[in-house]
Image 1 (cartoon, rainbow, N blue to C red):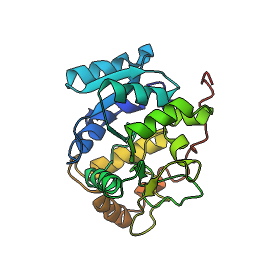
Image 2: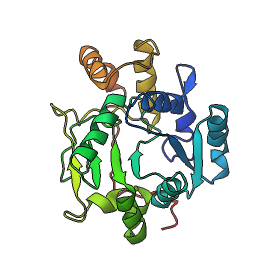
Image 3: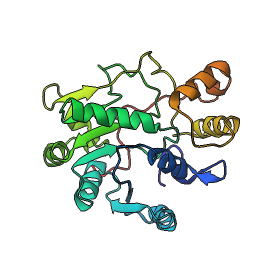
Length: 243
């Protein structure tokens, strides 16, 4: 709830429901997920998230505000997860089939970590807002023990992929490069874009990312709403952080 650029964003209304409703509803359609947990913080402002989870019978865990790596580790340990799929609550267009695809790649290639995007020098090919990261609990535990840089603690997974050869990783690329598209919600402009898109799609939950892509190609004015927003990098750290 204490987001810097858009406070309260995860409970902002989209088609009569808070944004987290859409993230959870779409994620739950993935076939390879055993459970879903909202990993929020101990900050009192996040009492609203806990109340929403209780009302909707969704597992919730509270941890550190800025040490998100610790929050993820403690949540995974608490729920005895052997594999962790990281999704972010500001991505209401997350695609369940894409979640399954990344999980399948993780197991088929027997890696420590799989994702459909990584920061430079890798090239992002999926739109921002479809980010999926899959890690073994063993890899997450090692990162939790050894990561010490502020950005490694705040952004959860960088210790795993920031040094080549440290872990065995798999990166999935889209058939065509769509990495310049912005489908996440971190600013008022992003929220305006997402609300407009959902309204155009009649506020339904069952649509794939490729259907969105086709729709936006036919309606390019929508993406101009948040075209000027600069995406934060994985090395950016909240200036309120204790690190």
